[in-house]
Image 1: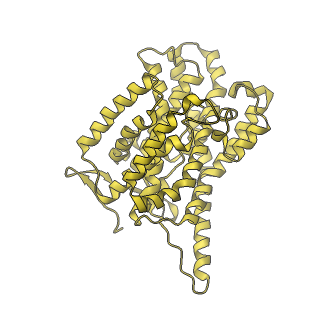
Image 2: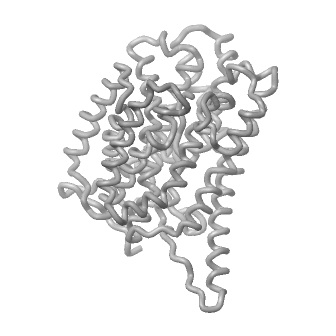
Image 3: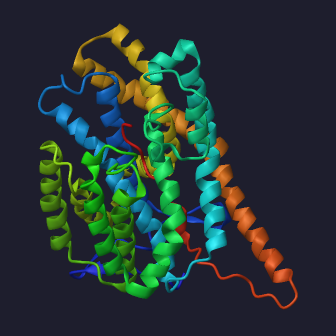
Length: 405
């Protein structure tokens, strides 16, 4: 494959675009990104484990605080999403076939979401189970807002069925504006786009004291677009050979991470999204291919492939198993052990099944629909086959992960 190459910084390969795992139908996945996605997924899982099993404040050795910080796996995930969607666009000369893009994104995210929504809605409505998963039984309004994926835009709806589903709504918002982002990228450059979205995120955070509608919410587009745009900027650097040196990237991870942790620990509510953006971008650019070199690395990569199904299932499984775990023991450390083994195994097993039965077929459906559209367009007299930005790495794009709602 002629376009595949190695990007070097300081004379050493940092991100090898040739580390693909080929999938049926000519698709491929970028292993390093899948490994990072798995780490983000696990960090959010352990955040939820601590919160939903009631052990976050009782764990020794700062483990409770570490569990809380796991919520910021979602910041890494938003950056990864922007990176994966922008990488093929950057390599195609900042071109995007909008119709094909929306076909692929809709078939990628909606079928698994609606299946999970049906199950979670049932748990939130049935009297025997609703008190385990939500504060009060879900009603028609909650089901409707989630069905149209608008739960993060309606005050009080994010946690009425599944507190993590806010990030699905966020992902839909990001998909809808991505073509506009590409236009702004082409006209103004991504550096300026990121600067504008950073200012917008800060101004949005300043609206938090308004306590009206969704102003200042961290679950919607105005706050998170800077992370998505920064991920796209990282992709443009990669394709242009402008990746910073490893020392600079590690400084961004360590220094930026320390500042972000300090800001979150101090409950600093203004600009936290931007604080986590810097180390997240550096982590993505450092996202090595080493995940595939050892057994634990291969496991992380595989979990990254199933991470969307993992995200959709992890919260209801944690909530439904919490009472059972407390019947076994009330020891925080033993509960942490049970959650990290038995409960995690249940979520992983469910994720594998859902990925095989629903997620993978829905992705294949999107590919077939795009192929059919191209064949129909090519058969039209005097027609020109629609341009495509589809490149192997685009299959690595996944919906973002949610955290507590």
